[in-house]
Image 1: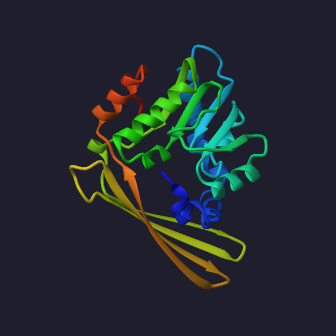
Image 2: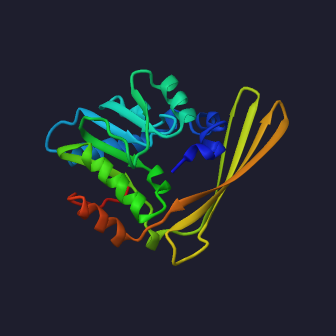
Length: 227
């Protein structure tokens, strides 16, 4: 999973906070924090965020936990460090990183979708389990194949003389496969001058039984919630 091959996670990473400011993550992240606290028997103090992106979630997570963020994109990490200097950010792959310490809680919102094979997904879950304290909580936000539908999205944002519109098209090329295509088109205007960028991301899409099997294989007790 070398996400830096995608411009959205390298030279175009700067667009992310313009499209979605850290404040816009607050409601969602408060819900994540609530779920974590409700499912821990002790007061959670430390949290590991695998594939943390530009740090939008940490803007709120840091109010509740001592946070460590890990990502494979240096472009994303640079933005995250500037946004949240209180948070320890580290470069690493969620499938293989070894930090030598354990955490009360671990979360992988959204970007676990970049695990496109069962082996990659298994590795990410095992990595998370190996960093989790006994009795800790692993929160994963996952798309389930049985409930996923093809869709289109538009995101917009502006800052100063920069205006950005992003179109995203989600398409399932093979209904029997384990991936879908997220094709993204960037329209970036700087003082009215237009740049257009496009790229296609392959995202993992697994059936519920696959998720449950891998989580139980890692000796994790599973509780499903709709967030």
